[in-house]
Length: 299
Image (cartoon, rainbow, N blue to C red; front, top):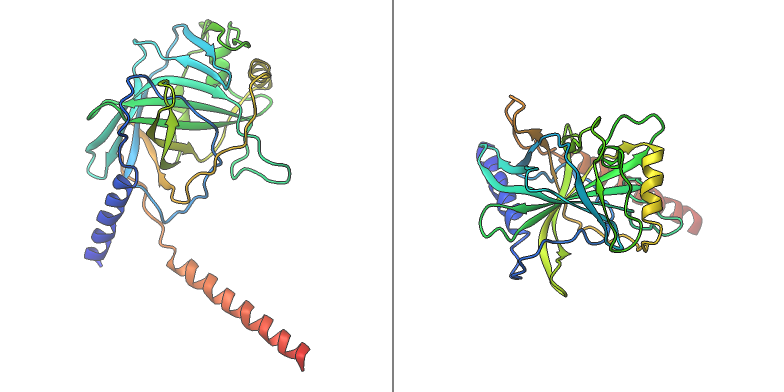
């Protein structure tokens, strides 16, 4: 049994690593957030052999924001060092991602009668550059937001404090001008799980894309109605496109703080064999019931 579990773990590790590949595009400019994606379905048996070990310190200095026509893009200053490592079960760091850009955008417009797997009204995308290897790999962490009256202080409200969002294409404005509330991105990772897969996002080099490791948070954070209204007004002229379908293969991964004091380990996979057997039994019983009813009708 131990050998079987070890073999399965090694197979999962290889599949997780090689399912992405690497990009052959040599573009020195950062990736863009691209379009919104539909949230994938969670498979508790499909667990990544790595986990997110995050380190995001509070930040209080102004940050420049630009209206890009499909969102609000916020440049991360050089003195704001924040990001995460992907670490395996032994604690070895596989990748080291450093935050480069923050994007606030509307979610994709879902067709009437359809619904998202995860209901939300805004998305914050954290774009990171991998500082290991060729430094050409990027990651996109998508954090969904819902609106709640009396919501506690959040990252969107902190950015808007004492500030005005740019509401015209190409316009730039400073954000995070209020001194009472710091920008704390660690709340997006605290006690959170993510669904991750490889995809491609546009770069700022015309007509080129890059393979990106995308992480989609499994639960929404909340922001206040005033913050939501301010973002919606700034993005009023931005087009609303339908979300892109996520791949069927999405890996579940957990997170823990880099300086939390406790050991970090990847999430355990859930054995779904019993649930599968029960579902197959119910399916067989349903088929037998339908056949019996048909025979009765034909008699």
